[in-house]
Length: 530
Image 1: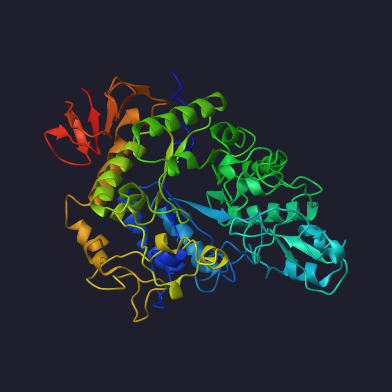
Image 2 (image 1 turned 180 degrees about the vertical axis):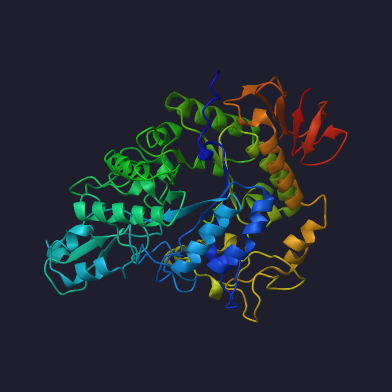
Protein backbone atom coordinates (compact mmCIF):
# COMPACT_ATOMS: atom_id res chain seq x y z
CA UNK A 1 0.00 0.00 0.00
CA UNK A 2 1.43 3.37 -1.03
CA UNK A 3 1.76 5.87 1.81
CA UNK A 4 0.19 9.29 1.36
CA UNK A 5 2.74 12.06 0.88
CA UNK A 6 3.63 13.94 4.05
CA UNK A 7 1.62 17.10 4.53
CA UNK A 8 3.68 20.27 4.32
CA UNK A 9 3.69 22.47 7.44
CA UNK A 10 0.85 25.01 7.38
CA UNK A 11 3.15 28.01 7.33
CA UNK A 12 4.88 27.14 4.04
CA UNK A 13 2.10 28.59 1.89
CA UNK A 14 -0.16 30.31 4.44
CA UNK A 15 -1.80 33.69 3.90
CA UNK A 16 -1.40 35.60 7.16
CA UNK A 17 -3.33 38.77 8.03
CA UNK A 18 -1.64 41.38 10.20
CA UNK A 19 -3.75 42.96 12.95
CA UNK A 20 -2.60 46.23 14.50
CA UNK A 21 -4.69 45.96 17.68
CA UNK A 22 -5.14 49.65 18.35
CA UNK A 23 -6.72 50.15 14.92
CA UNK A 24 -8.58 46.95 14.06
CA UNK A 25 -11.81 46.98 16.10
CA UNK A 26 -12.91 48.67 19.34
CA UNK A 27 -15.34 46.73 21.54
CA UNK A 28 -15.52 48.97 24.61
CA UNK A 29 -16.13 52.31 22.87
CA UNK A 30 -13.05 54.23 23.98
CA UNK A 31 -11.85 54.96 20.44
CA UNK A 32 -8.99 52.45 20.54
CA UNK A 33 -9.01 48.86 19.32
CA UNK A 34 -8.87 45.96 21.76
CA UNK A 35 -8.74 42.18 21.97
CA UNK A 36 -12.51 41.65 22.40
CA UNK A 37 -12.89 43.71 19.23
CA UNK A 38 -10.52 41.35 17.43
CA UNK A 39 -12.41 38.32 18.71
CA UNK A 40 -15.72 39.72 17.50
CA UNK A 41 -14.33 40.26 13.99
CA UNK A 42 -12.56 36.90 13.59
CA UNK A 43 -15.49 35.45 11.57
CA UNK A 44 -14.87 38.23 9.02
CA UNK A 45 -11.26 37.06 8.63
CA UNK A 46 -12.27 33.42 8.38
CA UNK A 47 -14.76 34.41 5.65
CA UNK A 48 -12.08 36.46 3.91
CA UNK A 49 -10.13 33.23 3.51
CA UNK A 50 -6.85 33.83 5.35
CA UNK A 51 -5.08 31.05 7.20
CA UNK A 52 -3.70 32.91 10.21
CA UNK A 53 -3.51 36.25 11.98
CA UNK A 54 -0.40 38.03 13.20
CA UNK A 55 -1.15 40.33 16.12
CA UNK A 56 1.20 43.29 16.58
CA UNK A 57 2.33 43.86 20.21
CA UNK A 58 -0.46 43.66 22.76
CA UNK A 59 1.80 43.72 25.84
CA UNK A 60 1.86 46.33 28.63
CA UNK A 61 3.73 49.35 27.28
CA UNK A 62 4.05 53.11 27.78
CA UNK A 63 3.36 53.31 24.02
CA UNK A 64 6.41 55.39 23.21
CA UNK A 65 6.58 53.42 19.94
CA UNK A 66 3.11 52.02 19.38
CA UNK A 67 3.61 49.06 21.71
CA UNK A 68 7.08 48.12 20.48
CA UNK A 69 8.41 49.26 23.85
CA UNK A 70 7.39 46.37 26.08
CA UNK A 71 7.34 46.68 29.87
CA UNK A 72 6.03 43.14 30.58
CA UNK A 73 6.36 40.28 28.07
CA UNK A 74 3.91 37.97 29.87
CA UNK A 75 0.80 40.13 30.19
CA UNK A 76 -1.65 42.22 28.14
CA UNK A 77 -1.87 46.01 28.02
CA UNK A 78 -4.99 47.07 29.97
CA UNK A 79 -6.14 49.23 27.06
CA UNK A 80 -6.35 46.01 24.97
CA UNK A 81 -7.84 43.75 27.62
CA UNK A 82 -6.59 40.90 29.80
CA UNK A 83 -4.79 37.59 29.50
CA UNK A 84 -8.21 35.95 29.69
CA UNK A 85 -9.31 38.04 26.68
CA UNK A 86 -6.22 36.84 24.82
CA UNK A 87 -6.97 33.23 25.73
CA UNK A 88 -10.53 33.62 24.44
CA UNK A 89 -9.31 35.23 21.23
CA UNK A 90 -6.79 32.42 20.58
CA UNK A 91 -9.43 29.78 21.29
CA UNK A 92 -11.97 31.42 18.97
CA UNK A 93 -9.39 31.76 16.21
CA UNK A 94 -8.58 28.07 16.49
CA UNK A 95 -12.29 27.19 16.47
CA UNK A 96 -12.59 29.07 13.17
CA UNK A 97 -9.53 27.34 11.71
CA UNK A 98 -7.19 30.33 12.07
CA UNK A 99 -3.65 30.16 13.45
CA UNK A 100 -2.34 32.95 15.72
CA UNK A 101 1.14 34.51 15.55
CA UNK A 102 2.20 37.09 18.15
CA UNK A 103 4.93 39.69 18.01
CA UNK A 104 8.10 39.15 20.02
CA UNK A 105 10.05 42.38 20.57
CA UNK A 106 13.33 41.13 22.00
CA UNK A 107 16.01 43.49 20.72
CA UNK A 108 14.90 46.06 23.27
CA UNK A 109 12.54 46.51 26.18
CA UNK A 110 10.73 49.58 27.41
CA UNK A 111 12.70 51.96 29.58
CA UNK A 112 9.86 51.30 32.07
CA UNK A 113 10.68 47.59 32.26
CA UNK A 114 11.67 46.56 35.77
CA UNK A 115 15.05 45.41 34.45
CA UNK A 116 15.95 48.83 33.07
CA UNK A 117 14.78 50.64 36.17
CA UNK A 118 17.03 48.32 38.19
CA UNK A 119 19.90 48.98 35.81
CA UNK A 120 19.63 52.75 36.26
CA UNK A 121 19.50 52.31 40.03
CA UNK A 122 22.67 50.20 39.98
CA UNK A 123 26.19 51.34 39.36
CA UNK A 124 28.47 50.73 36.36
CA UNK A 125 29.55 47.12 36.03
CA UNK A 126 26.59 45.75 38.01
CA UNK A 127 24.73 42.57 36.94
CA UNK A 128 21.61 44.71 36.38
CA UNK A 129 23.42 46.91 33.86
CA UNK A 130 24.86 43.82 32.15
CA UNK A 131 21.36 43.07 30.84
CA UNK A 132 21.63 46.15 28.61
CA UNK A 133 24.38 47.96 26.72
CA UNK A 134 25.98 50.59 28.97
CA UNK A 135 29.31 52.21 28.10
CA UNK A 136 31.39 55.14 29.25
CA UNK A 137 31.09 58.21 27.07
CA UNK A 138 33.91 59.66 25.04
CA UNK A 139 35.68 62.99 25.49
CA UNK A 140 36.52 64.72 28.79
CA UNK A 141 34.25 63.36 31.53
CA UNK A 142 32.44 61.12 29.05
CA UNK A 143 30.18 63.92 27.83
CA UNK A 144 30.03 62.61 24.24
CA UNK A 145 28.43 59.33 23.05
CA UNK A 146 30.67 56.25 23.14
CA UNK A 147 30.70 56.02 19.33
CA UNK A 148 28.94 57.20 16.16
CA UNK A 149 26.15 54.60 16.02
CA UNK A 150 22.83 56.02 14.84
CA UNK A 151 19.20 55.37 15.79
CA UNK A 152 16.54 54.20 13.36
CA UNK A 153 14.44 57.14 14.56
CA UNK A 154 17.14 59.74 13.97
CA UNK A 155 20.13 61.04 15.89
CA UNK A 156 22.56 59.15 18.09
CA UNK A 157 21.83 55.60 19.25
CA UNK A 158 23.12 56.53 22.72
CA UNK A 159 21.50 58.47 25.54
CA UNK A 160 23.28 59.60 28.72
CA UNK A 161 22.57 58.26 32.19
CA UNK A 162 21.76 61.28 34.36
CA UNK A 163 23.31 60.12 37.62
CA UNK A 164 26.07 62.71 38.11
CA UNK A 165 28.85 60.14 37.78
CA UNK A 166 32.17 60.82 36.05
CA UNK A 167 32.87 59.51 33.54
CA UNK A 168 29.28 59.67 32.38
CA UNK A 169 27.75 56.40 31.17
CA UNK A 170 25.45 56.08 28.18
CA UNK A 171 22.97 53.38 27.18
CA UNK A 172 22.32 52.04 23.69
CA UNK A 173 18.97 52.28 21.87
CA UNK A 174 18.88 51.54 18.16
CA UNK A 175 15.33 52.87 18.17
CA UNK A 176 13.77 55.43 20.55
CA UNK A 177 15.48 56.37 23.85
CA UNK A 178 12.51 54.73 25.58
CA UNK A 179 13.59 51.42 23.97
CA UNK A 180 16.97 50.44 25.49
CA UNK A 181 18.66 47.54 23.67
CA UNK A 182 18.98 44.30 25.62
CA UNK A 183 22.39 42.63 25.83
CA UNK A 184 22.01 39.20 24.28
CA UNK A 185 25.46 38.16 25.49
CA UNK A 186 23.92 38.00 28.99
CA UNK A 187 22.77 34.47 29.86
CA UNK A 188 20.08 35.84 32.16
CA UNK A 189 18.48 37.64 29.23
CA UNK A 190 18.58 34.47 27.14
CA UNK A 191 17.02 32.32 29.86
CA UNK A 192 14.28 34.87 30.54
CA UNK A 193 13.21 34.89 26.90
CA UNK A 194 13.21 31.10 26.79
CA UNK A 195 10.54 31.41 29.47
CA UNK A 196 8.65 34.08 27.50
CA UNK A 197 8.46 31.77 24.48
CA UNK A 198 7.21 28.91 26.63
CA UNK A 199 4.63 31.15 28.33
CA UNK A 200 2.91 32.00 25.04
CA UNK A 201 3.34 28.54 23.53
CA UNK A 202 1.50 27.12 26.52
CA UNK A 203 -1.31 29.63 25.91
CA UNK A 204 -1.73 28.19 22.42
CA UNK A 205 -0.02 30.60 20.01
CA UNK A 206 1.13 29.13 16.71
CA UNK A 207 4.25 31.23 16.20
CA UNK A 208 6.21 34.38 16.77
CA UNK A 209 7.07 37.29 14.52
CA UNK A 210 10.57 38.39 15.55
CA UNK A 211 10.84 42.17 15.54
CA UNK A 212 14.12 43.77 14.38
CA UNK A 213 15.81 40.37 14.30
CA UNK A 214 19.19 41.50 12.82
CA UNK A 215 19.67 44.09 15.60
CA UNK A 216 19.99 41.68 18.49
CA UNK A 217 23.77 41.00 18.36
CA UNK A 218 26.49 43.66 18.60
CA UNK A 219 30.23 43.47 18.00
CA UNK A 220 32.03 43.63 21.38
CA UNK A 221 33.78 46.90 22.11
CA UNK A 222 31.26 48.94 20.09
CA UNK A 223 33.53 49.81 17.13
CA UNK A 224 32.47 52.80 15.01
CA UNK A 225 30.96 52.32 11.55
CA UNK A 226 31.45 54.28 8.34
CA UNK A 227 27.80 54.76 7.33
CA UNK A 228 27.07 55.39 3.64
CA UNK A 229 24.75 58.16 4.87
CA UNK A 230 24.85 58.83 8.63
CA UNK A 231 21.46 60.57 8.47
CA UNK A 232 19.63 57.47 7.21
CA UNK A 233 19.12 54.11 8.92
CA UNK A 234 19.17 52.12 5.66
CA UNK A 235 20.12 48.61 6.73
CA UNK A 236 19.61 47.14 3.26
CA UNK A 237 22.76 48.97 2.11
CA UNK A 238 25.02 48.11 5.04
CA UNK A 239 27.90 45.65 4.87
CA UNK A 240 29.94 44.69 7.95
CA UNK A 241 27.87 46.83 10.31
CA UNK A 242 28.77 46.19 13.99
CA UNK A 243 25.19 46.53 15.29
CA UNK A 244 23.11 45.02 12.49
CA UNK A 245 23.22 41.55 10.92
CA UNK A 246 26.18 40.48 13.09
CA UNK A 247 26.90 36.77 12.64
CA UNK A 248 26.47 35.86 16.31
CA UNK A 249 22.78 36.78 16.10
CA UNK A 250 22.17 33.33 14.65
CA UNK A 251 23.10 31.70 17.96
CA UNK A 252 20.01 33.32 19.48
CA UNK A 253 17.67 32.00 16.82
CA UNK A 254 19.07 28.47 16.95
CA UNK A 255 18.37 28.52 20.68
CA UNK A 256 14.82 29.76 20.13
CA UNK A 257 14.22 27.12 17.47
CA UNK A 258 15.15 24.42 19.99
CA UNK A 259 12.64 25.88 22.48
CA UNK A 260 9.87 26.04 19.86
CA UNK A 261 10.58 22.57 18.44
CA UNK A 262 10.41 21.07 21.94
CA UNK A 263 6.75 22.16 22.14
CA UNK A 264 4.08 19.98 20.47
CA UNK A 265 2.69 21.36 17.22
CA UNK A 266 3.86 23.24 14.14
CA UNK A 267 4.78 26.63 15.56
CA UNK A 268 6.66 29.00 13.28
CA UNK A 269 9.29 31.70 13.74
CA UNK A 270 9.07 34.60 11.29
CA UNK A 271 11.90 37.12 11.04
CA UNK A 272 11.61 40.82 10.38
CA UNK A 273 15.07 41.18 8.87
CA UNK A 274 15.91 44.06 6.55
CA UNK A 275 19.39 43.07 5.40
CA UNK A 276 21.59 43.49 2.36
CA UNK A 277 19.85 41.28 -0.17
CA UNK A 278 18.17 37.86 -0.27
CA UNK A 279 21.46 36.04 0.10
CA UNK A 280 22.02 37.56 3.56
CA UNK A 281 18.38 37.00 4.42
CA UNK A 282 18.69 33.30 3.58
CA UNK A 283 21.26 32.93 6.36
CA UNK A 284 18.46 33.44 8.93
CA UNK A 285 16.54 30.47 7.59
CA UNK A 286 17.02 26.74 7.78
CA UNK A 287 16.17 23.52 9.60
CA UNK A 288 17.80 24.67 12.86
CA UNK A 289 16.96 28.38 12.78
CA UNK A 290 14.03 30.55 11.63
CA UNK A 291 11.52 28.98 9.24
CA UNK A 292 10.44 32.06 7.28
CA UNK A 293 11.29 35.75 6.93
CA UNK A 294 9.63 38.81 5.48
CA UNK A 295 10.79 39.68 1.99
CA UNK A 296 11.37 43.42 2.17
CA UNK A 297 12.74 43.57 -1.35
CA UNK A 298 9.16 42.81 -2.44
CA UNK A 299 7.61 45.24 0.06
CA UNK A 300 9.75 48.08 -1.27
CA UNK A 301 9.72 47.18 -4.98
CA UNK A 302 8.38 49.79 -7.43
CA UNK A 303 5.64 49.01 -9.95
CA UNK A 304 8.09 47.92 -12.62
CA UNK A 305 8.07 44.54 -14.37
CA UNK A 306 11.83 44.15 -14.72
CA UNK A 307 12.45 45.07 -11.09
CA UNK A 308 9.73 42.75 -9.78
CA UNK A 309 10.96 39.82 -11.86
CA UNK A 310 14.48 40.36 -10.54
CA UNK A 311 13.19 40.28 -6.94
CA UNK A 312 11.25 37.08 -7.62
CA UNK A 313 14.23 35.36 -9.27
CA UNK A 314 16.77 36.41 -6.63
CA UNK A 315 14.45 35.47 -3.78
CA UNK A 316 13.66 32.00 -5.10
CA UNK A 317 17.29 31.36 -6.05
CA UNK A 318 18.54 32.30 -2.57
CA UNK A 319 15.96 30.20 -0.72
CA UNK A 320 15.90 27.11 -2.94
CA UNK A 321 19.19 25.57 -1.68
CA UNK A 322 17.97 25.60 1.94
CA UNK A 323 14.39 24.59 1.17
CA UNK A 324 12.83 27.63 2.83
CA UNK A 325 9.61 29.14 1.49
CA UNK A 326 9.43 32.69 0.23
CA UNK A 327 7.02 35.18 1.76
CA UNK A 328 5.46 38.11 -0.08
CA UNK A 329 3.89 41.26 1.36
CA UNK A 330 3.16 44.75 0.10
CA UNK A 331 2.22 46.70 3.24
CA UNK A 332 2.47 46.58 7.03
CA UNK A 333 2.12 48.80 10.09
CA UNK A 334 5.61 50.18 9.31
CA UNK A 335 5.21 50.88 5.59
CA UNK A 336 3.36 53.37 3.41
CA UNK A 337 0.28 51.57 2.11
CA UNK A 338 1.08 50.12 -1.30
CA UNK A 339 -1.99 51.65 -2.94
CA UNK A 340 -0.50 55.08 -2.26
CA UNK A 341 3.01 54.02 -3.27
CA UNK A 342 1.83 52.58 -6.58
CA UNK A 343 -0.45 55.52 -7.33
CA UNK A 344 2.16 58.27 -6.90
CA UNK A 345 -0.52 60.85 -6.10
CA UNK A 346 -3.30 59.30 -8.23
CA UNK A 347 -5.59 57.14 -6.06
CA UNK A 348 -7.49 55.72 -9.05
CA UNK A 349 -4.21 54.56 -10.59
CA UNK A 350 -3.13 53.25 -7.21
CA UNK A 351 -6.31 51.18 -6.88
CA UNK A 352 -5.91 49.65 -10.34
CA UNK A 353 -2.33 48.72 -9.56
CA UNK A 354 -3.19 47.47 -6.08
CA UNK A 355 -5.81 45.14 -7.57
CA UNK A 356 -3.29 43.85 -10.08
CA UNK A 357 -0.54 43.59 -7.47
CA UNK A 358 -2.48 41.37 -5.07
CA UNK A 359 -3.21 38.83 -7.80
CA UNK A 360 0.46 38.82 -8.78
CA UNK A 361 1.52 38.45 -5.15
CA UNK A 362 -0.92 35.66 -4.30
CA UNK A 363 0.15 33.74 -7.42
CA UNK A 364 3.79 33.46 -6.29
CA UNK A 365 5.16 30.34 -4.57
CA UNK A 366 5.35 30.45 -0.79
CA UNK A 367 3.35 32.37 1.79
CA UNK A 368 1.85 35.85 1.79
CA UNK A 369 1.09 38.55 4.36
CA UNK A 370 -1.81 40.97 4.14
CA UNK A 371 -2.03 44.13 6.23
CA UNK A 372 -5.38 45.05 7.72
CA UNK A 373 -7.41 47.26 5.42
CA UNK A 374 -5.58 46.53 2.20
CA UNK A 375 -8.47 44.21 1.27
CA UNK A 376 -10.66 47.34 1.42
CA UNK A 377 -8.36 49.39 -0.81
CA UNK A 378 -7.42 51.83 1.95
CA UNK A 379 -4.82 54.44 1.11
CA UNK A 380 -2.19 56.08 3.29
CA UNK A 381 -3.83 58.94 5.20
CA UNK A 382 -1.44 61.79 4.53
CA UNK A 383 -3.32 64.75 5.99
CA UNK A 384 -3.54 63.82 9.68
CA UNK A 385 -3.10 67.08 11.63
CA UNK A 386 0.39 67.32 13.11
CA UNK A 387 -1.04 67.76 16.60
CA UNK A 388 -2.51 64.24 16.38
CA UNK A 389 0.59 62.43 15.08
CA UNK A 390 2.03 60.01 17.64
CA UNK A 391 4.83 58.16 15.86
CA UNK A 392 8.25 58.95 17.45
CA UNK A 393 9.69 59.20 13.94
CA UNK A 394 7.81 62.48 13.51
CA UNK A 395 9.06 63.96 16.77
CA UNK A 396 12.67 62.79 16.54
CA UNK A 397 13.01 63.95 12.92
CA UNK A 398 11.90 67.45 13.87
CA UNK A 399 8.82 67.02 11.69
CA UNK A 400 10.79 66.19 8.53
CA UNK A 401 9.22 62.71 8.40
CA UNK A 402 5.54 62.28 9.22
CA UNK A 403 6.14 58.72 10.41
CA UNK A 404 3.86 55.72 10.19
CA UNK A 405 0.56 56.96 11.60
CA UNK A 406 -0.89 57.29 8.09
CA UNK A 407 -1.05 53.51 7.65
CA UNK A 408 -2.41 52.91 11.17
CA UNK A 409 -5.74 54.76 10.92
CA UNK A 410 -8.62 52.67 12.37
CA UNK A 411 -10.54 50.49 9.95
CA UNK A 412 -13.97 51.41 8.54
CA UNK A 413 -16.50 48.63 9.09
CA UNK A 414 -19.94 50.14 8.48
CA UNK A 415 -22.04 53.29 8.34
CA UNK A 416 -21.67 56.59 6.53
CA UNK A 417 -19.65 58.63 9.03
CA UNK A 418 -16.78 58.20 11.46
CA UNK A 419 -16.14 56.00 13.41
CA UNK A 420 -17.58 53.78 10.63
CA UNK A 421 -18.41 50.94 13.00
CA UNK A 422 -14.88 50.79 14.38
CA UNK A 423 -16.21 51.78 17.79
CA UNK A 424 -19.69 51.44 19.33
CA UNK A 425 -19.32 54.53 21.51
CA UNK A 426 -19.18 58.29 20.99
CA UNK A 427 -15.40 58.55 21.41
CA UNK A 428 -13.47 59.68 18.36
CA UNK A 429 -11.03 57.11 16.92
CA UNK A 430 -7.49 57.68 18.14
CA UNK A 431 -6.54 58.75 14.61
CA UNK A 432 -9.07 60.48 12.31
CA UNK A 433 -10.65 58.55 9.44
CA UNK A 434 -11.19 60.21 6.03
CA UNK A 435 -14.84 61.00 5.30
CA UNK A 436 -14.69 59.28 1.89
CA UNK A 437 -14.00 55.94 3.60
CA UNK A 438 -17.79 55.70 3.83
CA UNK A 439 -17.54 54.15 0.35
CA UNK A 440 -14.83 51.70 1.47
CA UNK A 441 -16.42 50.14 4.56
CA UNK A 442 -16.76 46.38 4.81
CA UNK A 443 -20.53 46.86 4.78
CA UNK A 444 -20.46 48.88 1.55
CA UNK A 445 -18.04 46.55 -0.24
CA UNK A 446 -19.97 43.42 0.68
CA UNK A 447 -22.81 44.80 -1.49
CA UNK A 448 -20.53 45.48 -4.47
CA UNK A 449 -19.41 42.44 -6.50
CA UNK A 450 -16.70 44.56 -8.15
CA UNK A 451 -15.19 45.79 -4.89
CA UNK A 452 -11.65 45.25 -3.69
CA UNK A 453 -13.01 43.10 -0.85
CA UNK A 454 -14.72 40.73 -3.28
CA UNK A 455 -11.53 40.50 -5.35
CA UNK A 456 -9.55 39.46 -2.27
CA UNK A 457 -12.15 36.91 -1.19
CA UNK A 458 -12.29 35.36 -4.65
CA UNK A 459 -8.51 35.27 -5.01
CA UNK A 460 -8.05 33.65 -1.60
CA UNK A 461 -10.74 31.07 -2.34
CA UNK A 462 -9.13 30.15 -5.66
CA UNK A 463 -5.70 30.07 -4.07
CA UNK A 464 -6.92 27.38 -1.70
CA UNK A 465 -8.77 25.43 -4.42
CA UNK A 466 -6.28 25.42 -7.30
CA UNK A 467 -3.82 22.63 -6.57
CA UNK A 468 -1.11 24.09 -8.81
CA UNK A 469 -0.86 27.14 -6.55
CA UNK A 470 0.75 24.85 -3.97
CA UNK A 471 3.32 23.55 -6.44
CA UNK A 472 6.95 24.55 -5.83
CA UNK A 473 8.62 27.17 -7.98
CA UNK A 474 7.43 28.80 -11.17
CA UNK A 475 8.25 28.71 -14.87
CA UNK A 476 8.53 31.97 -16.80
CA UNK A 477 6.69 32.13 -20.13
CA UNK A 478 7.60 34.34 -23.10
CA UNK A 479 6.06 37.82 -22.85
CA UNK A 480 6.55 41.30 -24.27
CA UNK A 481 8.40 43.99 -22.32
CA UNK A 482 6.48 45.16 -19.28
CA UNK A 483 4.56 41.87 -18.90
CA UNK A 484 5.20 39.16 -16.32
CA UNK A 485 3.87 35.77 -17.35
CA UNK A 486 4.56 32.52 -15.54
CA UNK A 487 3.15 29.07 -14.95
CA UNK A 488 2.72 27.18 -11.67
CA UNK A 489 2.31 23.44 -11.94
CA UNK A 490 0.68 22.05 -15.09
CA UNK A 491 -2.41 24.22 -15.43
CA UNK A 492 -2.17 27.54 -13.59
CA UNK A 493 -0.88 30.67 -15.34
CA UNK A 494 -0.54 34.27 -14.15
CA UNK A 495 -0.19 37.21 -16.54
CA UNK A 496 0.49 40.68 -15.10
CA UNK A 497 0.58 43.60 -17.53
CA UNK A 498 2.74 46.39 -16.11
CA UNK A 499 3.41 47.86 -19.55
CA UNK A 500 1.79 50.74 -21.39
CA UNK A 501 -0.24 48.79 -23.98
CA UNK A 502 -2.93 46.13 -23.81
CA UNK A 503 -2.11 42.49 -24.55
CA UNK A 504 -4.43 39.73 -25.78
CA UNK A 505 -6.60 38.01 -23.20
CA UNK A 506 -5.59 34.36 -22.73
CA UNK A 507 -8.17 31.59 -22.83
CA UNK A 508 -9.31 30.11 -19.55
CA UNK A 509 -9.29 33.25 -17.38
CA UNK A 510 -10.80 32.50 -13.97
CA UNK A 511 -10.06 35.84 -12.30
CA UNK A 512 -9.04 39.29 -13.50
CA UNK A 513 -8.21 42.42 -11.57
CA UNK A 514 -10.10 44.39 -14.23
CA UNK A 515 -12.71 43.10 -16.68
CA UNK A 516 -12.21 43.53 -20.42
CA UNK A 517 -11.73 41.82 -23.76
CA UNK A 518 -7.97 42.39 -23.50
CA UNK A 519 -5.52 42.64 -20.62
CA UNK A 520 -5.21 46.39 -20.12
CA UNK A 521 -2.12 48.00 -18.53
CA UNK A 522 -2.05 47.62 -14.74
CA UNK A 523 -4.08 44.42 -14.87
CA UNK A 524 -3.39 40.86 -13.75
CA UNK A 525 -5.30 37.75 -14.81
CA UNK A 526 -5.29 34.18 -13.51
CA UNK A 527 -5.74 31.34 -15.99
CA UNK A 528 -6.49 27.69 -15.34
CA UNK A 529 -5.84 25.59 -18.44
CA UNK A 530 -7.85 22.41 -19.13
